View 1 (cartoon, helix red, strand yellow):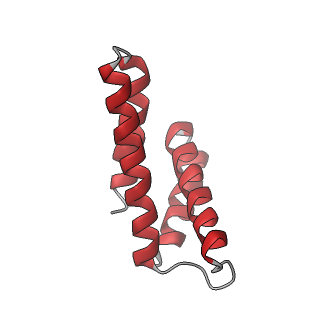
View 2 (cartoon, rainbow, N blue to C red):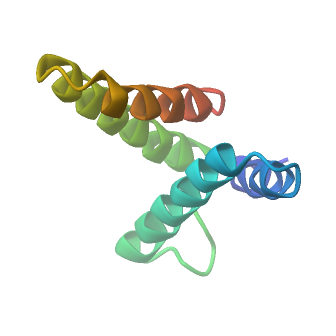
Length: 93
């Protein structure tokens, strides 16, 4: 199964299962993949699994950097959701 399809399926399962946090995280990932497709002109054929993995890795890095900034500024309540999102995204790498 293509990675993009797996993300979509797990997003639907999370939302239908009542896990809004995971569902919204995967929805944001799906939007990031779509943005990359549009930016690279591959909207019709879609990205390869390797390209999707690069998008996921970039999103994980963003979450890690945000969490570090929040922790450095004594805001652990803001860092924890970022870290949880990163863990959900790492499952696709």
